[in-house]
Image (cartoon, rainbow, N blue to C red):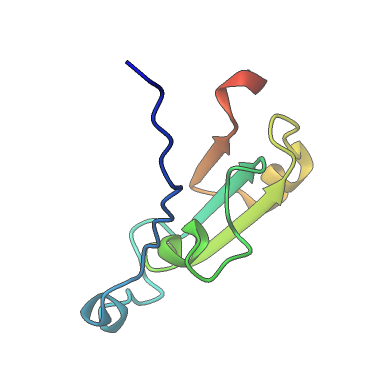
Length: 91
């Protein structure tokens, strides 16, 4: 079977208008999340993951660095959830 080339397809996520209207108040169940990420996380884009997290958390803290956790920042901020997002090949 010959190799078949395909075009890249870009997928963009956007919040529905009704979701934007339902943004939670400051007394959310979980108030603070910290995400340590590598180049596969997308905080700099308006369609990025951070945009979606802000609808569920009062404060979203992002730090670039992958496996290099900033332990002092975690101690200072005391987040409810800490996410480590790295490509599997980095583990």
